[in-house]
Amino acid sequence: MTDSPLRAAIDDAVVVWSVPADELADRLPTSPLVIIMHGYGSHENDLISLAPLLPEGTIAASLRAPLVAPQPIVDGFAWFTIGQPGNPQISGLDDAAASVLEWLDRVEAAYGTAPSITTLGFSQGGAMAVHLLRTAPARFAAAVNLSGFTVTGDAPGDQVLAVTRPPVFWGRDVADPIITAEAVARTEAWLPGHSTLTANLYPGILHGVSQEEIGDVTVFLQAALGLSDPDDAPASATATAPAPAAATEARG
Image 1 (cartoon, rainbow, N blue to C red):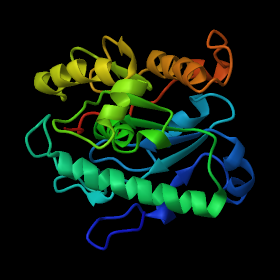
Image 2 (image 1 turned 90 degrees about the horizontal axis):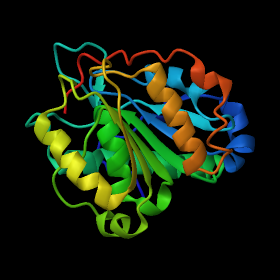
Image 3 (image 1 turned 180 degrees about the horizontal axis):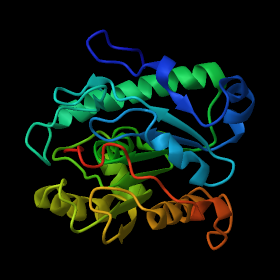
Image 4 (image 1 turned 90 degrees about the vertical axis):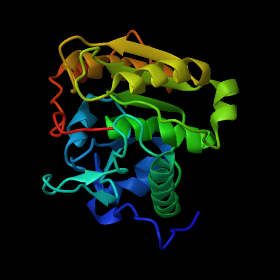
């Protein structure tokens, strides 16, 4: 896949890795990769703080979304334009997914291919985590959707997912004030038929992330990626998980 001159690209220079860049060539070919995607109006330095809470041995890469979020947001970014709240145009997610896949091609050319790749995102980033799976199911082992949703329309990998049912984690609060009821209902209808779904509710987090949720994500990834006994969560999973910086600003 080659970069399109008409598509906003992922900026390689601002990707935040959980390990030093000079170790990637040695470590990435033997370490599961988790691609982290922030919410609307946030940035690459937000969710990388979750990396130490993920299963031991994984490498995380936190990306900056390719679009600049409009005013009144300052120094924030977006994966796609909001459009109708909770029901953005699928074409915007297609463009963002293509940009992530182009970035991944560059990473693999430079450092080698990880044994497995998982997508993890919050809000808009959560929608992206699932949409990347829908776009290129053969490239991803699992997806983690935190307070996100799925979008209306067909994606290239949907028929494959209906057969393979890869592991997907979906965590949210029923009182989330940002994600619309329509988006929740759409996601509830779509995910069970296209994934092996772990769907958990976290009362009180609203549009955010909790310590309990990240602990559950760690256990989910251990099982989904075959990293260790899922009943043996690492001690790091008990650390406090910071709420995403843009939790009160994220939109569909």
